[in-house]
Image 1 (cartoon, rainbow, N blue to C red):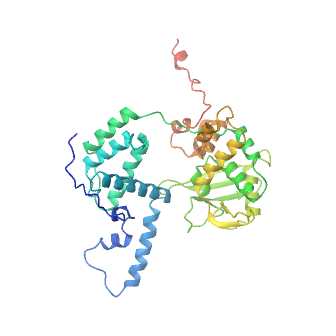
Image 2 (tube, one colour):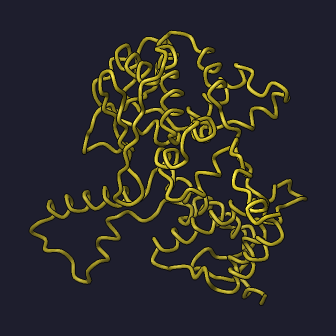
Image 3 (cartoon, helix red, strand yellow):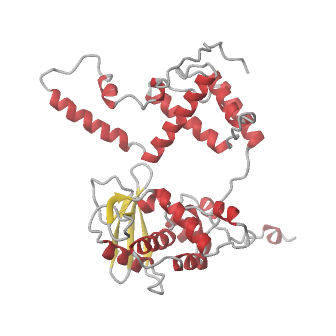
Length: 371
């Protein structure tokens, strides 16, 4: 690979380098749309339009995605400064060196090597940031694509899947929770997340009722005596519905747990799952972070003794929010197509990746061929 062009090596870059700041305000982007300034007689209308455009721009991606992309840009900008390169405009040779450094790590500095998936995510973040600044990155350029292909070939590893929380595990985890307000909320989170096969962002993104002005991921509708219908916002402009039926016991029924939390938490509108103050009696108006779901799964799995054959340091790494989703796929003794629909997968192959107890040799082509 050709060496990059020489870059200035000055180390006196100010700490508040503008490249580390957030993207230009949407006002600047709107003003760039036309060469002539707007008529001075309607500044209020323009301000309203800018505010509307800002809302739409933020709605184009989730808050977690924007935070991740901002982190990617800060990491790249910092690396460029340390090595005497300019982050802008995008230079394919510099980006090729950057991903090489990410893959190799910094043994002398104690910096760990990044995984292939993290490097690919970083590239996506850089591409987004460059595009927002009006200077698109050519990811197909050989200085990037060839280096990335080599990183994949040398460092790619099979994905590490989180441990599935099976049905009996979930019962033990729920039993560790008390009957205070926080326990009622967390019980509803675990049971609904498991029975619905929901992602952690989908769980905390739910509203107690439909609200077209909400920034949530969807809402619930309870059908007395039958179950709860969860409506979720999917990719693009797609919506999907997840039916969660009543269980065989009120103690482990996700619908009963949900009704109990709504009643005692006095949730009438807005976010379904919210923070609770230290007094364990007052419910906040703010929506829970999706990190709470991951912590909750880890804590209750450890408390319930799930995978007690392993040391605690290893056990805590096995469980995450996705353990609920894969747990349903692994526990439900039902036709695969129903599990696929519940998880919202486009293909059965994706659903099979979540099934930890799947009989891989149910279809035996060896015997079918006469051997």
